[in-house]
Amino acid sequence: MKIINSTHADIDTIFHLYDEAIAFQKKVFNKQWEGFERDLIETEIQENRQWKIIIDNQVACIFATTLSDAVLWKEKDQEPAVSSTGS
Image 1 (tube, rainbow, N blue to C red):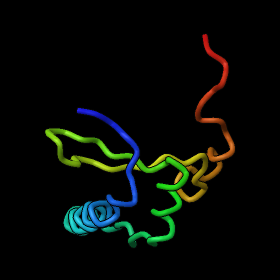
Image 2: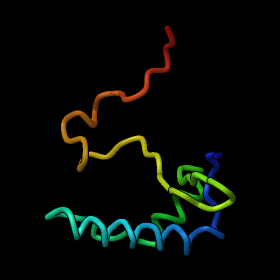
Image 3: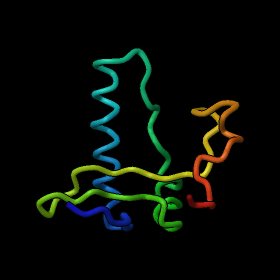
């Protein structure tokens, strides 16, 4: 297993996996993602914030990192999630 940044060559795979995730969410939840804009994914890739997990030479998972998400974290969005000081 390895975790590496996604590339522009992965965009079709990324959207396929997001579509599969949304289909699953529709089966088991009352809420689901509405989908993602291509520009957003391209920006995540360009900024090295889009990742893929490779298992047996295949993309097994994709995810993105972000520094803030007020919709998800609400008032906690203003709190630091990662500290720059180590112990």
